[in-house]
Each structure stands twice: as C-alpha cells, then as structure tokens.
Length: 250
Image (cartoon, rainbow, N blue to C red):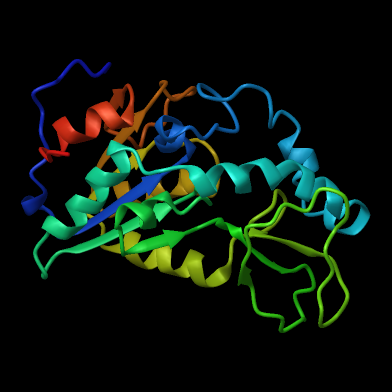
C-alpha cells in the first residue's frame, strides 16, 4: 500500500528477535544516490562492470574512479530521520529482546545515528585494504581519493582497494554466518530502502518468513516482480514512514 499516514503501528514489545535490513533507499534523504531505481541518476550505470572484482586484475584504477565520489559524499552526509528512528528503536527495547540491523550500505550512517548492533554486510567505503587476500596488511580508516594513480600495499606491493564487497565477489563468510544466525529465530523482519529482489539479500526475507516472522517491506517503489515472502508492503519515503509506523518521535 502507499503510505498515507496509515494508522497501522508496530508494537515492538510483542517481538523477541527483531531483524532490520536496509538498502541504499534509506540514505537518499541524506543526499546519497542509489545505484538503481528512484534516487539514481545514471552515475553508477556501469557499476556492475567498473566495480567488478575482475577490475582489480586489469584496471584497479577504474574501481577508485567509480567509488571516489561516494567516499567523499559519505564524509559529509548526515543521518536522516529514518536512521535516527532505528537508533532510537534499538535503545528503547528491553534487555531480553534481540535487535540486529543488517545494512547493505557502506557509508556508516547507521553508526553515526547511534545504532550499535550493525552488520555492515558490504563493508565500509571509508576504509582501505589490500587486494591480496593472503596479505596481512590491516584495513585502515582512509578519507583520501585516489584520482591519478592506484595506491599500493606497503607490505606486498599489490593494489590497495576500498574495503567493500565488489560485484562478482562473495560476502565475507563471518558476516554471512552472523546473518544466518539471527534470521534463524527472527519473529519480525523489516526491509527498508531495498528492492528485496537482489541476492543474497533477497534470501533473507525468505529465511525470516520460513522462521515464522512477520515480514514488512518499506521502499520508494513497489517490488517488480513482487516478492511473495513480504506479507506487508508500504511504498513511500522511509524518513516519513518510520516515525509513524514505529511510533517514535524524532
């Protein structure tokens, strides 16, 4: 349904294991563009090619060129009401309740807003790491853009890269395990600002529904094709819907 100040509210005290999944759509109000759909403007139209893991072998500078602007943008971006509501929700729960926020975003706005239990599924854009998986060089906080040349690892001399999951690359095993663990006993699953159709995240709602969870999608546009595992769907801006639906004041 399209959100029109709907009177439906969520009583979070009725749920024991709450899992929230967020995608790029939740950050549009913070001035950050999405890769696809509403909020995108074509800047990332070749992202699946330029941001592919294969570029580390043949053209690592293409990866930096693609993500430099996102790194700069996220440094100045601030959490919007949707991020703040989620942080307040986490703090309002009882100690006996479990809360996990899984984000596909790499810009750390949830942590800026005050969320603590966050799984950053795709990494962090403001960290740099070595492209050589056998190298023990530790990822580090890095705000620099690398425009003219690709930085090299001081330990093994391989190209450095943004510490994010690239296209064609598997999710980190430890994070995938964490997600599977929390979904196993999930009784409330809410996806916000994501199409719900891109894998592996598309499997999360299926796992939650299989566990008997109430499943809700909040997004700027309807899923196409419709995901049958979402039993409730609200179409609109997350920053407008969440304060009303969650009964939390900003």
